Image (cartoon, rainbow over all chains, first blue to last red):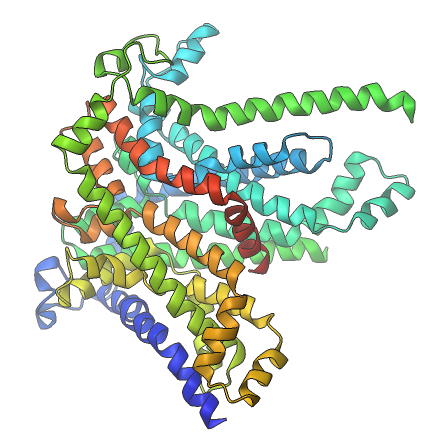
Length: 292
Length: 279
């Protein structure tokens, strides 16, 4: 067993060291930083930093720009998550129904946006959403609709960004749901049919309960991703117009680039706490439905 | 049953039409991007927009690669992605092996640490990571771009789950034959890990190639920019009205990934599905 013990740490040491230095250390350090007024100039002289207790956190709740960013981010999750999950599930059910030809082609096509760089595809969408020369308004024009200036209007900018996020994300959900659907034993459906269950009843009483673990997984992963939305508004709107598409991750980045490291750390800790709480909430909610 | 057949066939047709319409929405932006990257800025401002370039030219690409420094950004992205991937394959498979097959004090604690890390978001760690990297003198270096991502917890988790399924007898008989742990890992475990290594390799390369926030923070001068950083800063900076140029830049980032995806799509999809199910 001593041989094992030595060998075990021998294999695990490179990861452990890198992990402690580059991740665990910084995560703990940022908690400490969030209770101080540390700025970029203080990085090489940590003793010059003054602890200010919960000052940064108190300031967050009076910072109107941050509150708007938090509201926008919550909206992205509340609207974007159900749409992505529902559309991903719908496509997966369609592809899994056993009547669809060219399944491989469909699967690859729907999955395509997932593998592409968000920055690059956000650049493309910015052009697609141009008021005059954009493809979206060009197509709307064909059916006689005069499309708005999507990204320059406070009431359409966030919906347009969310639409792009849903477009890019639904393929990921589809793949996970397909794997979940294929794991459901066919005997369950046969038994349900013998009991006289129609298509809807089969979906309601066989498919949905069997997909519950998959649903928990895509909901948790989906909300972790959506709470961190950064690239899309950075490229498409720079958070505008009038902060209508500003997100929490963008606020962290802009406070960071102003050199306000303590304040930025407080924001990112709040984001971290939100992610943990939301994940726990999803687990509880979706599990308790199972018990019902 | 035969009474229902026409209805079923109609339903199947409707399903195909709906799925095909959705597929068009998914693919059209890529087709338009590729076609438009051969257009001039004048044509890109036309109303209504065009699909096929009226006067196709490589001018946008020539400008990216001759006048601007895109070969450099491309090389930076490739170098970082390759080293990050190689590091993860080696370090995370070794750690996965230790966690799955070796008994040592602290193993449980290490595994819990790995699990706990799966929920820590990059947006919440980049500020302190930057402070660390800057104290190490690694801002604006390749080491600064690579090191924080060279051993990702999610990959340790994936490798551990896969290696658990390798039978102990196999490893034990090699040990009886006098093989040391290193040889067991290198000559028996790794060769059996093909599918897991493919998944980890593809997902890590993809993540690194597409990553934006960390390179944006660490690369402070143009010679260290990766492709996404360069494109994003061009698109909000003085080149923001150079439509053709930006679209050609987007193609430069997306096309290599699409080619890899086309060749390895089975691994992509299976990898992601197993990641999902096993978690």
